[in-house]
Length: 133
Image (tube, rainbow, N blue to C red; front, side, top):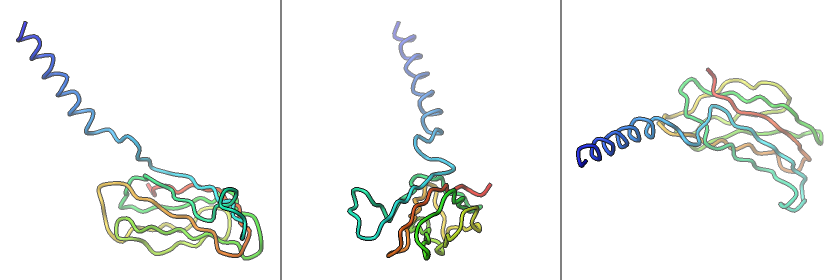
């Protein structure tokens, strides 16, 4: 009986080690944003900054696909990140795909990108950041 119990425990631990270590719980190969910014509006109804979290680090880089962008003339978004050595800021002024960018460093984890609407201009936008594969 002890032999069967030990075998079952050993098998269960081995299964957890193999499958538990190789599965990512929250990371993804894309993430979306939603900006609805009005200068002077309370933060309960207006967001100038949106963090796109837990995207897998990918050495091949990333691109954004801006689905909607409306508001005042002068509206614009900037995409930045401090993770994995940072990146050169990416400006978004129209809908569609942006240029591809890469992180300046590397990591084995995930990165968070920050999408920020330009101050002083009404801006509504949705979009997705993808790994460039």
